[in-house]
Image 1: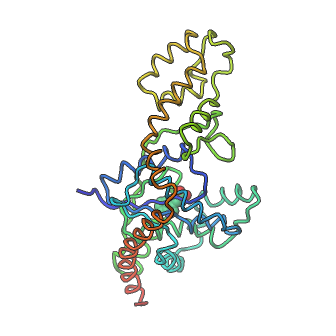
Image 2 (image 1 turned 90 degrees about the vertical axis):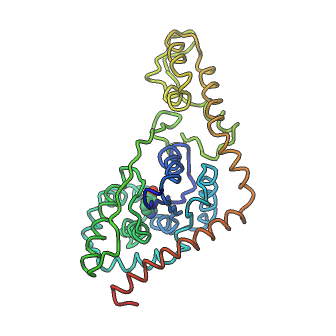
Image 3 (image 1 turned 60 degrees about the vertical axis):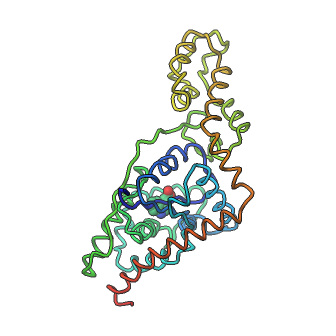
Length: 330
Ligand code: TRP
Protein backbone atom coordinates (compact mmCIF):
# COMPACT_ATOMS: atom_id res chain seq x y z
CA UNK A 1 0.00 0.00 0.00
CA UNK A 2 1.41 3.36 -1.06
CA UNK A 3 1.51 6.10 1.55
CA UNK A 4 0.85 8.70 -1.16
CA UNK A 5 2.58 10.44 -3.99
CA UNK A 6 6.04 11.96 -3.76
CA UNK A 7 7.65 14.39 -6.15
CA UNK A 8 11.24 15.49 -5.95
CA UNK A 9 13.95 16.69 -8.28
CA UNK A 10 17.61 17.63 -8.47
CA UNK A 11 19.48 19.99 -10.69
CA UNK A 12 22.01 18.34 -12.98
CA UNK A 13 25.12 20.32 -12.17
CA UNK A 14 27.79 17.70 -12.80
CA UNK A 15 29.03 17.79 -9.24
CA UNK A 16 27.27 14.98 -7.49
CA UNK A 17 29.26 13.79 -4.48
CA UNK A 18 28.92 11.39 -1.61
CA UNK A 19 27.59 14.18 0.63
CA UNK A 20 24.74 14.82 -1.83
CA UNK A 21 23.98 11.12 -1.89
CA UNK A 22 23.73 10.89 1.88
CA UNK A 23 21.81 14.15 2.09
CA UNK A 24 19.05 13.18 -0.31
CA UNK A 25 19.39 10.32 -2.74
CA UNK A 26 19.88 7.66 -0.07
CA UNK A 27 16.55 8.74 1.39
CA UNK A 28 14.80 8.60 -2.00
CA UNK A 29 15.96 5.03 -2.43
CA UNK A 30 14.25 4.15 0.86
CA UNK A 31 11.09 6.04 0.00
CA UNK A 32 10.61 4.28 -3.32
CA UNK A 33 9.26 1.21 -1.51
CA UNK A 34 6.70 3.11 0.53
CA UNK A 35 5.42 5.85 -1.76
CA UNK A 36 4.39 6.31 -5.32
CA UNK A 37 7.42 8.34 -6.45
CA UNK A 38 8.10 10.71 -9.30
CA UNK A 39 11.66 12.00 -9.65
CA UNK A 40 12.79 14.59 -12.17
CA UNK A 41 16.15 15.74 -13.39
CA UNK A 42 15.52 19.48 -13.20
CA UNK A 43 17.35 20.72 -16.28
CA UNK A 44 15.09 23.78 -16.62
CA UNK A 45 16.04 24.76 -13.09
CA UNK A 46 19.69 24.43 -14.04
CA UNK A 47 19.04 27.01 -16.76
CA UNK A 48 17.88 29.59 -14.24
CA UNK A 49 21.51 30.22 -13.32
CA UNK A 50 23.54 28.41 -16.00
CA UNK A 51 21.81 29.72 -19.09
CA UNK A 52 24.86 31.19 -20.81
CA UNK A 53 26.70 27.99 -21.64
CA UNK A 54 24.36 25.04 -21.94
CA UNK A 55 26.73 22.76 -23.82
CA UNK A 56 27.51 20.55 -20.81
CA UNK A 57 23.89 19.97 -19.90
CA UNK A 58 23.33 16.72 -21.85
CA UNK A 59 26.41 15.19 -20.21
CA UNK A 60 25.30 16.33 -16.76
CA UNK A 61 21.85 14.81 -17.28
CA UNK A 62 23.40 11.52 -18.32
CA UNK A 63 25.73 11.55 -15.32
CA UNK A 64 22.92 12.35 -12.92
CA UNK A 65 20.86 9.46 -14.21
CA UNK A 66 23.86 7.19 -13.86
CA UNK A 67 24.22 8.37 -10.25
CA UNK A 68 20.55 7.71 -9.55
CA UNK A 69 20.57 4.27 -11.09
CA UNK A 70 23.73 3.24 -9.31
CA UNK A 71 22.30 4.50 -6.02
CA UNK A 72 19.47 2.03 -6.54
CA UNK A 73 16.57 4.13 -7.78
CA UNK A 74 14.50 1.67 -9.70
CA UNK A 75 12.86 2.80 -12.95
CA UNK A 76 10.36 -0.06 -12.55
CA UNK A 77 9.14 1.30 -9.22
CA UNK A 78 9.31 5.03 -9.95
CA UNK A 79 8.70 7.50 -12.70
CA UNK A 80 12.05 9.08 -13.54
CA UNK A 81 12.35 11.68 -16.28
CA UNK A 82 13.95 14.88 -17.52
CA UNK A 83 11.90 17.96 -16.69
CA UNK A 84 12.26 19.71 -20.07
CA UNK A 85 10.91 16.61 -21.83
CA UNK A 86 7.50 17.03 -20.25
CA UNK A 87 6.32 20.33 -21.73
CA UNK A 88 3.46 20.63 -19.26
CA UNK A 89 5.99 21.90 -16.70
CA UNK A 90 6.69 24.93 -18.90
CA UNK A 91 3.01 25.49 -19.61
CA UNK A 92 1.96 25.34 -15.98
CA UNK A 93 4.85 27.55 -14.92
CA UNK A 94 3.63 30.19 -17.35
CA UNK A 95 0.01 30.00 -16.23
CA UNK A 96 0.90 30.09 -12.54
CA UNK A 97 3.18 33.07 -13.14
CA UNK A 98 0.14 35.08 -14.26
CA UNK A 99 -1.47 34.90 -10.85
CA UNK A 100 1.55 34.93 -8.53
CA UNK A 101 2.16 38.30 -6.87
CA UNK A 102 5.65 39.53 -7.53
CA UNK A 103 6.17 40.24 -3.83
CA UNK A 104 5.69 36.55 -2.98
CA UNK A 105 8.65 35.65 -5.16
CA UNK A 106 10.79 38.57 -4.08
CA UNK A 107 10.44 37.71 -0.42
CA UNK A 108 11.60 34.08 -0.75
CA UNK A 109 14.70 34.19 1.49
CA UNK A 110 16.88 32.16 -0.86
CA UNK A 111 16.22 34.66 -3.65
CA UNK A 112 18.18 37.63 -2.35
CA UNK A 113 20.86 35.37 -0.84
CA UNK A 114 21.53 33.61 -4.09
CA UNK A 115 21.34 36.79 -6.10
CA UNK A 116 24.16 38.07 -3.94
CA UNK A 117 26.22 34.86 -3.90
CA UNK A 118 25.98 33.91 -7.54
CA UNK A 119 26.42 37.56 -8.49
CA UNK A 120 29.71 37.50 -6.56
CA UNK A 121 30.75 34.49 -8.64
CA UNK A 122 30.27 36.56 -11.77
CA UNK A 123 26.93 35.06 -12.83
CA UNK A 124 24.27 37.54 -13.80
CA UNK A 125 21.07 36.13 -12.44
CA UNK A 126 19.14 39.35 -12.41
CA UNK A 127 16.71 37.62 -14.68
CA UNK A 128 13.04 36.87 -14.95
CA UNK A 129 13.79 33.15 -14.96
CA UNK A 130 15.79 33.18 -11.78
CA UNK A 131 13.10 35.03 -9.87
CA UNK A 132 10.72 32.33 -11.09
CA UNK A 133 12.84 29.46 -9.73
CA UNK A 134 10.40 28.60 -6.91
CA UNK A 135 7.48 29.18 -9.28
CA UNK A 136 8.86 26.45 -11.52
CA UNK A 137 9.32 24.20 -8.49
CA UNK A 138 5.69 24.77 -7.62
CA UNK A 139 4.64 23.80 -11.13
CA UNK A 140 6.78 20.64 -10.91
CA UNK A 141 5.12 19.47 -7.73
CA UNK A 142 1.50 20.42 -8.25
CA UNK A 143 1.41 19.08 -11.79
CA UNK A 144 1.44 15.61 -10.23
CA UNK A 145 -0.70 16.58 -7.22
CA UNK A 146 2.09 15.25 -5.05
CA UNK A 147 1.27 15.40 -1.35
CA UNK A 148 4.87 14.92 -0.24
CA UNK A 149 8.17 16.44 -1.21
CA UNK A 150 11.36 15.03 0.32
CA UNK A 151 13.72 17.99 0.53
CA UNK A 152 16.22 19.55 2.87
CA UNK A 153 15.12 22.21 5.32
CA UNK A 154 16.57 24.91 3.09
CA UNK A 155 13.72 24.23 0.67
CA UNK A 156 10.99 24.93 3.23
CA UNK A 157 10.31 28.48 2.04
CA UNK A 158 9.80 27.11 -1.47
CA UNK A 159 7.21 24.64 -0.23
CA UNK A 160 5.48 27.37 1.74
CA UNK A 161 5.23 29.39 -1.45
CA UNK A 162 3.91 26.38 -3.33
CA UNK A 163 1.12 25.99 -0.77
CA UNK A 164 0.22 29.66 -1.05
CA UNK A 165 0.04 29.45 -4.81
CA UNK A 166 -2.12 26.31 -4.58
CA UNK A 167 -4.56 28.02 -2.22
CA UNK A 168 -4.73 31.11 -4.38
CA UNK A 169 -5.28 29.13 -7.56
CA UNK A 170 -7.94 26.84 -6.11
CA UNK A 171 -9.80 29.77 -4.61
CA UNK A 172 -9.52 31.98 -7.68
CA UNK A 173 -10.81 29.39 -10.13
CA UNK A 174 -13.27 27.82 -7.75
CA UNK A 175 -12.08 24.24 -7.86
CA UNK A 176 -9.68 22.10 -5.82
CA UNK A 177 -7.46 21.39 -8.80
CA UNK A 178 -4.19 21.30 -6.87
CA UNK A 179 -3.07 19.63 -3.65
CA UNK A 180 -1.04 21.47 -1.00
CA UNK A 181 2.33 19.72 -0.79
CA UNK A 182 4.03 18.95 2.52
CA UNK A 183 7.75 18.58 3.13
CA UNK A 184 9.05 15.17 4.06
CA UNK A 185 12.14 15.98 6.08
CA UNK A 186 14.69 13.31 6.74
CA UNK A 187 17.29 13.49 9.43
CA UNK A 188 20.09 12.89 7.01
CA UNK A 189 23.59 12.64 8.39
CA UNK A 190 25.77 15.48 7.20
CA UNK A 191 28.99 14.23 5.71
CA UNK A 192 31.85 16.72 6.02
CA UNK A 193 34.36 17.27 3.24
CA UNK A 194 37.73 15.52 3.54
CA UNK A 195 39.19 18.73 5.04
CA UNK A 196 36.40 19.06 7.60
CA UNK A 197 34.60 21.96 5.91
CA UNK A 198 31.23 21.52 4.22
CA UNK A 199 31.65 19.08 1.33
CA UNK A 200 31.57 21.15 -1.82
CA UNK A 201 33.14 20.94 -5.22
CA UNK A 202 34.26 24.56 -4.99
CA UNK A 203 36.42 23.65 -1.98
CA UNK A 204 37.97 20.67 -3.78
CA UNK A 205 37.19 18.53 -0.73
CA UNK A 206 34.60 16.12 -2.08
CA UNK A 207 34.44 12.40 -2.52
CA UNK A 208 32.82 12.05 -5.94
CA UNK A 209 29.87 9.70 -5.87
CA UNK A 210 31.17 8.18 -9.09
CA UNK A 211 34.57 7.33 -7.54
CA UNK A 212 35.89 3.86 -8.34
CA UNK A 213 37.04 1.74 -5.36
CA UNK A 214 40.63 2.88 -5.90
CA UNK A 215 39.68 6.52 -6.24
CA UNK A 216 37.63 6.15 -3.08
CA UNK A 217 40.62 4.70 -1.19
CA UNK A 218 42.76 7.58 -2.44
CA UNK A 219 40.27 10.21 -1.28
CA UNK A 220 39.92 8.53 2.13
CA UNK A 221 43.69 8.49 2.48
CA UNK A 222 43.58 12.30 2.17
CA UNK A 223 41.03 12.86 4.95
CA UNK A 224 42.37 15.25 7.56
CA UNK A 225 43.07 13.75 11.00
CA UNK A 226 44.02 15.15 14.40
CA UNK A 227 46.79 17.66 13.55
CA UNK A 228 48.39 17.18 16.98
CA UNK A 229 49.32 13.60 16.15
CA UNK A 230 52.73 13.30 14.57
CA UNK A 231 53.78 9.78 15.57
CA UNK A 232 51.30 6.99 15.72
CA UNK A 233 52.02 6.50 19.42
CA UNK A 234 50.87 10.09 20.13
CA UNK A 235 47.53 10.09 21.91
CA UNK A 236 44.76 11.09 19.50
CA UNK A 237 41.68 13.28 19.88
CA UNK A 238 38.85 11.76 17.85
CA UNK A 239 36.61 14.75 18.60
CA UNK A 240 38.72 16.95 16.33
CA UNK A 241 39.40 14.28 13.69
CA UNK A 242 37.55 14.35 10.37
CA UNK A 243 38.29 10.68 9.71
CA UNK A 244 36.57 9.85 12.99
CA UNK A 245 33.38 11.53 11.78
CA UNK A 246 33.52 9.25 8.78
CA UNK A 247 34.17 6.22 10.99
CA UNK A 248 30.99 7.00 12.92
CA UNK A 249 28.99 7.06 9.71
CA UNK A 250 30.52 4.14 7.86
CA UNK A 251 32.07 1.87 10.45
CA UNK A 252 29.61 1.46 13.31
CA UNK A 253 31.03 -1.99 14.15
CA UNK A 254 34.55 -0.83 14.85
CA UNK A 255 34.11 2.79 15.82
CA UNK A 256 34.24 2.23 19.59
CA UNK A 257 37.39 0.18 19.42
CA UNK A 258 39.03 2.65 17.05
CA UNK A 259 38.17 5.54 19.34
CA UNK A 260 39.76 3.76 22.28
CA UNK A 261 42.86 2.76 20.31
CA UNK A 262 43.24 6.29 18.94
CA UNK A 263 43.03 7.89 22.39
CA UNK A 264 45.65 5.47 23.69
CA UNK A 265 47.92 5.92 20.69
CA UNK A 266 47.57 2.26 19.67
CA UNK A 267 46.39 2.83 16.13
CA UNK A 268 47.91 5.21 13.62
CA UNK A 269 45.96 7.47 11.28
CA UNK A 270 47.04 5.57 8.20
CA UNK A 271 45.76 2.26 9.56
CA UNK A 272 42.58 3.89 10.84
CA UNK A 273 41.81 5.33 7.42
CA UNK A 274 42.65 2.08 5.66
CA UNK A 275 39.99 0.34 7.70
CA UNK A 276 37.56 3.13 6.97
CA UNK A 277 38.28 2.96 3.25
CA UNK A 278 37.55 -0.77 3.11
CA UNK A 279 34.23 -0.25 4.91
CA UNK A 280 33.29 2.47 2.47
CA UNK A 281 34.30 0.40 -0.53
CA UNK A 282 32.11 -2.43 0.83
CA UNK A 283 29.20 -0.10 1.47
CA UNK A 284 29.38 1.13 -2.10
CA UNK A 285 30.07 -2.20 -3.77
CA UNK A 286 26.54 -2.72 -5.09
CA UNK A 287 26.43 0.82 -6.37
CA UNK A 288 29.68 0.31 -8.16
CA UNK A 289 28.33 -2.82 -9.86
CA UNK A 290 25.16 -1.04 -10.96
CA UNK A 291 27.19 1.86 -12.29
CA UNK A 292 29.25 -0.47 -14.43
CA UNK A 293 26.10 -2.07 -15.69
CA UNK A 294 24.91 1.24 -17.17
CA UNK A 295 28.18 3.06 -17.67
CA UNK A 296 28.70 2.45 -21.35
CA UNK A 297 25.07 2.22 -22.31
CA UNK A 298 23.82 5.74 -22.98
CA UNK A 299 21.07 4.29 -25.18
CA UNK A 300 19.77 2.30 -22.22
CA UNK A 301 19.68 5.42 -20.05
CA UNK A 302 17.92 7.30 -22.83
CA UNK A 303 15.34 4.57 -23.11
CA UNK A 304 14.59 4.66 -19.38
CA UNK A 305 14.23 8.44 -19.45
CA UNK A 306 11.98 8.31 -22.53
CA UNK A 307 9.77 5.73 -20.82
CA UNK A 308 9.65 7.88 -17.69
CA UNK A 309 8.71 11.00 -19.63
CA UNK A 310 5.89 9.11 -21.34
CA UNK A 311 4.42 8.07 -18.01
CA UNK A 312 4.90 11.52 -16.50
CA UNK A 313 3.18 13.16 -19.47
CA UNK A 314 0.01 11.13 -18.95
CA UNK A 315 -0.39 12.37 -15.38
CA UNK A 316 0.73 15.90 -16.20
CA UNK A 317 -1.60 16.22 -19.15
CA UNK A 318 -4.55 15.11 -17.08
CA UNK A 319 -3.86 17.89 -14.59
CA UNK A 320 -3.36 20.41 -17.39
CA UNK A 321 -6.74 19.52 -18.85
CA UNK A 322 -8.31 20.48 -15.54
CA UNK A 323 -6.24 23.66 -15.37
CA UNK A 324 -7.17 24.74 -18.90
CA UNK A 325 -10.78 23.93 -18.16
CA UNK A 326 -11.06 26.11 -15.04
CA UNK A 327 -9.10 28.91 -16.72
CA UNK A 328 -11.33 28.81 -19.82
CA UNK A 329 -8.45 27.83 -22.04
CA UNK A 330 -9.78 24.42 -23.00
N1 TRP B 1 15.35 23.13 -6.20
C1 TRP B 1 15.72 21.77 -6.04
C2 TRP B 1 17.22 21.66 -5.76
O1 TRP B 1 18.00 22.46 -6.21
C3 TRP B 1 15.40 20.94 -7.26
C4 TRP B 1 13.96 20.92 -7.59
C5 TRP B 1 13.37 21.36 -8.73
C6 TRP B 1 12.92 20.39 -6.78
N2 TRP B 1 12.04 21.13 -8.70
C7 TRP B 1 11.72 20.55 -7.51
C8 TRP B 1 12.87 19.79 -5.51
C9 TRP B 1 10.50 20.16 -7.00
C10 TRP B 1 11.64 19.40 -5.00
C11 TRP B 1 10.47 19.58 -5.73
O2 TRP B 1 17.62 20.71 -5.12
